[in-house]
Amino acid sequence: MRLGVNYPAGPLEWAGKVGHARVRALLMSLHERYPTGRYAPSLGTARRGYAEEGRDSR
Image (cartoon, rainbow, N blue to C red; front, side):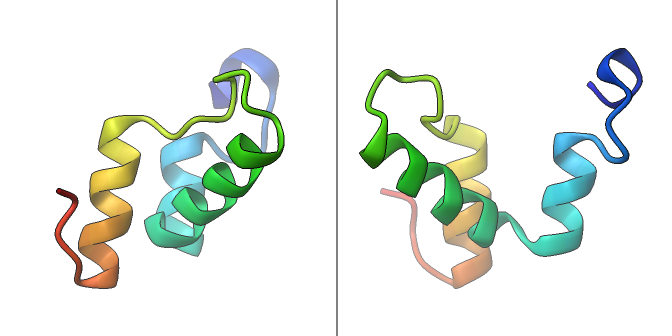
């Protein structure tokens, strides 16, 4: 993603810097506002975000 569109950081690098929980929260907020599925966090992102918060993803 980073090299293909010339972003300064790829999505995984960005999540590593700001935290998976923050990325999950941002994506959930966008998904609630625009429920087209475009911003729905992936299962892996959701699991990492919950794990970072110390909660179970189930």
